[in-house]
Length: 247
Image (cartoon, one colour):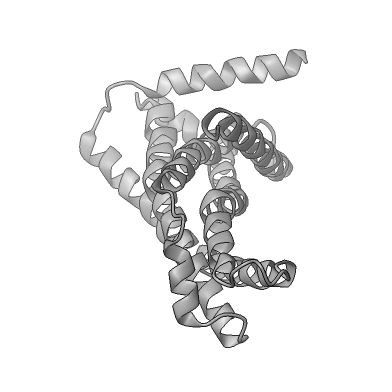
């Protein structure tokens, strides 16, 4: 418990120390754009694949469970749509990104710490927390919500394609179901969760990577610990936000 409170205090101290005036705006902007490319475009492929198959599986399993003749066939599209928007796209995609992006951030900063690159930057008078951590968090807050919105669209498209190709539902019935009972608030709620998850995915691995001590073995341990803690934090935040906002 003592170690947990100590790490929590160091985490908030790191966040507070990030907000200082940049020494060189051009240098910070270049780092920010680099992180946007690494996090956004670098994760595009895995997000697209996961989203398509999540939507397809959601449609097939919903069709398997809806066996009552009293339930209209268009309900398959409604259930698949809400499942993808509310849970699959924001939560599952962010858990995957916690492994992909989070481990990369922790490993990158951990390697810089072990190789004393961070110490060298500090000797040069650069606030390393602002230069190394803040661009990663800002890039995550911009690119990950975009990836989740794309995941929603691809998930719905994957569900439609799977339903039509398997003969479960026609394209017209699926499109009709998508429009029935749609609540724009669900998209808003999903984006609120995504911004919270994006902050977790970037800040927690950055903390563990920045504070690595030891050698190469410790970098691997720190990366693994960062992913585990991030996933647990995402699930906890998911429950809290659902309890607060879905009433």
